[in-house]
Length: 602
Ligand code: GCU
Image (cartoon, rainbow, N blue to C red):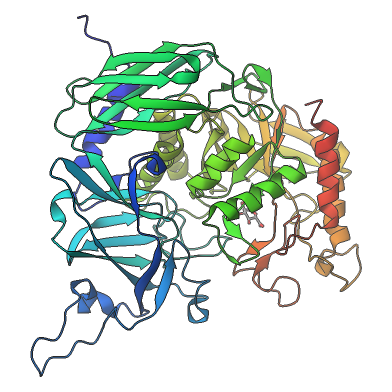
């Protein structure tokens, strides 16, 4: 049989996979995808904890869970008899004594598992913010750094008869070489913030797959499937029953197979968010996913969805349920935020500034809302510090790995507002190239806010944009930056004239119902002041060359400890168009009217 020529992407993936599984094995594995469709035993619920503000648990080795043996023994820690926390969920919002806690919390959960000899077992975390060290029965399984992407450990041969005990060391202290690093304008919710599952698989299982339309195509699927285990060369079926697709291929000796077939299908779009049941079958494993198919690309200064010009009516959202003042983690949290976005007239959401819960991405796709997915390479990152570019690379790969089959995701964003420097440019250019090699089907960008504003001229000069598919810039004219002339008279100089421009942030603060001072002064935090910013921004936006979309900052007030004015902010960033109680501010109506006015023309 003519040896299939597997395209470079597949080989590139294989190299990543081999090096990822071979680097110091104490590092977590990249998680298998589509966890909800796997054979899961959910470990959500109450976990015992030890609050460890001084790090004493490290030298006491609390993961050993020692018990007194002799009458004269005593142990100065115990999970039993201690407090409990809900998983998933941040720890800051669950106990008043943890409200501002940044340190180590030890979590414990026990489970029994009867694993059949022919099966494998993995321990999977949806996310842990920020550093995780995971122990099973007193032995270190491994570690993970990064607060917003999934990871897993194989525990097949590490189980014991009867009760098994998981201990997780979670630390959310800020790190100078962290991603994000020391300063960021959102609340540092620590904890096991997403689902924890035991996942049982067959001995050689379908660990990953990528099934999306080939770049620029409206009917050709180009992807791959990968097996993990000992028996790697297997017959593979990809079925889409509704389209009578039953594509057959075979994985090579490394467990990889390219997927390439054409079909007539109903394309996914915000108006028709069509998803298909896709069944991926090997000789001993089956995984079912719901996958949509669409084409997203740029053509000169236009963004095209399924070949037609698209204007992104966006909004920024942080992963927080403001009604609970907590990290969003449930389906209902996701629905609350996405219904608010839909009501505003949005067709896309920027999930700032980090990958949100997978339930948010999947629900947006079902609701016909496109997604801007971003890693927290945010502001003051130490690009030249040892290990930082490796962490960026890992976070990008973990984001792409989890969400690559979500057609609703149209943009990978690899940074936000980082300062110009040689080390930054080198790091982001490399990361962009790697991201494009991993997934050529989506738009790739980074957000920059170093444009010059003089004499009512905005000079967008940063040549880093040459490496991105879209020019994404934040501007706060009317709030941080006073106008230098009429908003409608602002002139634009763009370093690149051949790409779409996205205003990825603009806005200003207002305290809902504020009646503390003159309405036309920023320091009153009046709704009227914010409303005027939006009126002026609409005039500005109508003159932006090559404008492909906008993402006002942001949907709803959210917690950020640096927002310290005791009357107007009280630990909340007040740039929301909604208050933390969901009340519509006056500016909400300005944006709503603008989106209603353009939704049929753009
Ligand atoms: C910045 C940044 C946001 C921040 C916002 C603000 O542009 O990207 O993360 O919250 O401005 O100042 O409110």
